[in-house]
Image (tube, rainbow, N blue to C red; front, side, top):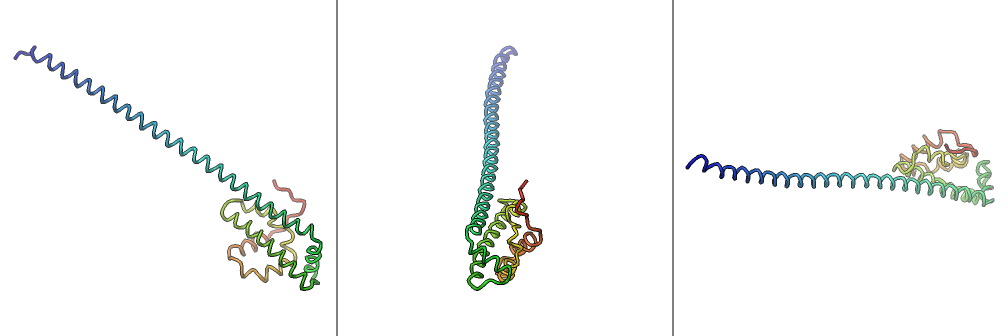
Length: 184
């Protein structure tokens, strides 16, 4: 065997190795490209999901604000449209209400207290900011009336502790919003 006899087979082996390496490199580069595309697709999917969650959160907040607003409007309409209720509230505040008027007033106060509880719960779950809730009627003058305070004192022990704190600290301890209040 001569040196020159080994050379062609060595060259062929080198060429074969070089071809295998090129094919392996090509195969690995395709694999890497597909992995990168997969990672980018996952990241984009997560970005789309995050955007949709933000949109959904905004929609939930908007719906909650609308519901609280409608409930407050319904409560106001009840007083505006019902002269007997207005007279009963006035008599209760003066301390001259009869039993029927007191039942009428207490039923109305139960309704608006439920509205206040709904406001509180909406703020607790983060659907609406507490300051927005309070500005949307949470500090209405009715909550500072003598007859409502009397009603509250009679039923407050039956309310959840956190709600009682909210009423005492956020609703009663602050001055009522005037009727000409306009939110920012």
